[in-house]
Length: 605
Image 1 (cartoon, one colour):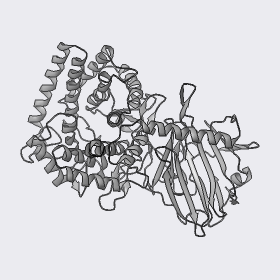
Image 2 (image 1 turned 90 degrees about the vertical axis):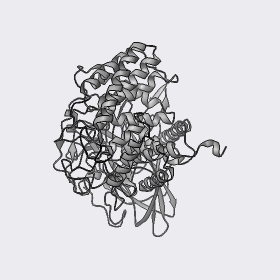
Image 3 (image 1 turned 180 degrees about the vertical axis):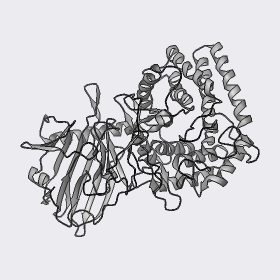
Image 4 (image 1 turned 30 degrees about the horizontal axis):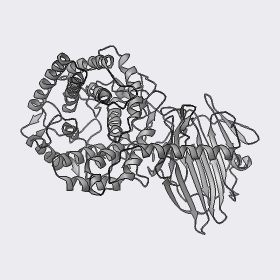
């Protein structure tokens, strides 16, 4: 491996979640503030990471860096309303470069063009900058160093199961030998499939860049935005869109694995799969700002999930290609994020019984029966498929499960699970009304009422003056706040107001909120869970405490990284981000909070 001269890049490169994401609904890549691509799984979200430096701080890590001699500072922004990322690096003498990163996405030949391809564009912006490029892809979780073959303007990186081709107008010798050179003109680099470009690299890069930027600007322009916090909503929406694996319609919970929920906690999980719960919340948030195409894509995937089930059990998550078995293992040779092992691949939660899954299926599909804009509206056949899920919800509504927090060693009748069983029956009744099926509406309405009565009776804790996390329990859990969001209870009901008060006294750390108060398989949680904070914001707004809700929402905006992205967790003392990144739940919360709290448009127009 070539040894680079000293003086390139920043003096240290500690891993952090100060990252940007590029992608195109086929794959994504994470880029740090110094223009290093530190994470990218190819050819899809759950594949082997071609770049794994996020989980490997050692010299053996795989990354793609562009390093400026004597770098002193950097800045990073997105081109407005796009997924095109721009990083500028400066040295102490005013020399500077600009690195533009994108994954192509646009309409071509009556379909979306979204190759597994990274376009990197370098240009000098001041002085006479000297740069060094290190392109070190790896395969098999970093174990396999590719064989290199060289052409006149390209390099092939040949791995056991994949070949990547870099095409560039930069001198190949400088790239392969990691030789510093003077960047005196723009240069383009296209890394992707082992295919010849149909034109010169500059022409191709220009075309991919302009068409991709135009696609995202047009996409963002079609969103229905709140008056306030528009930039935050657009960034959250684009990030959620990038979490869609468009080939099948699955939506991943996050783009990474094994970023711990807290330092040294061993709460390191692989989130590169499709949880039916998380996907519902993504669909609901995007629907709220008039982006319904993601729902249509997701319903393709969901239809395949429930069509193939044996009517006894639906898993809480599946692979993005409908894989059922997501066997959990550990990659022993990788140190982990900041040295926090283990690095896990797969997720044991696929074995769990999480009874809220049936409500999440029906909630995720419900709008398709009522929205006349859709290309593929749902009808009687789809309703009958969902009724199968409703029967499963009814059958387990008072049975113990692992709950939405996926507890591995404890089962209870969790209030949040029963709540979603109620939602399943309630929404089926409403769909039946829309379809003109009064007998089925009565059938499901009666079941919904029965479950509602049980929740109100058996989840209420007189001791805590709050709805508890389980039937007959007394411990508090933030997921109970979903009662108002899914329409189970009037938010002004004294019991719900009292529950919110109890949650704030017990689970709040300043503006942030933890999931629950009880110890779990790993002890008591140290960090706050971002979506719980957003549920708190929603609940406060619904019960009329708007000023408090806005203050907490502003605190969450401040907790984002420099590009407006959030991970799963926030440390209440340090404010640092922990957990997998970017987390769809958290980005959903940004959209929901902004739309709930914003002043209406008619106050200014």
